[in-house]
Length: 117
Image 1 (cartoon, one colour):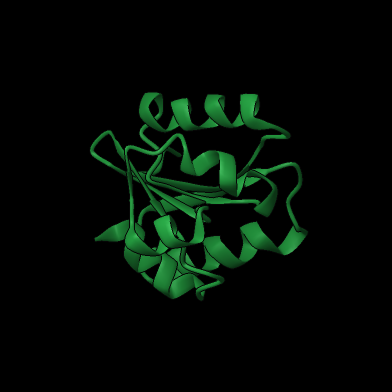
Image 2 (image 1 turned 90 degrees about the vertical axis):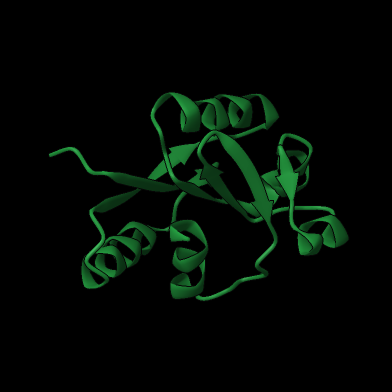
């Protein structure tokens, strides 16, 4: 089954519950979407994952802390909070423009709201 909205966690590893929690939230909110894990161990892998956002029309990513500083340099736009922090933890693909956010451990509902607006 193909989903309209695809989201994911990008990093070297994924905690077992992350996908379950996010996919349950998408279902609860009635969003035709799927959340998965996309492995990236370094900046080179990160560039590949961000490119996939365009090619596969992925809507948003959460970033592992190890990739947050290097990811900020790859964004088309940064929020004021991201500029101030010098890193990003959330990426939104807004019609081909990558926007970097620093939401500082916001709850999943707040992150989902950023991705969906």
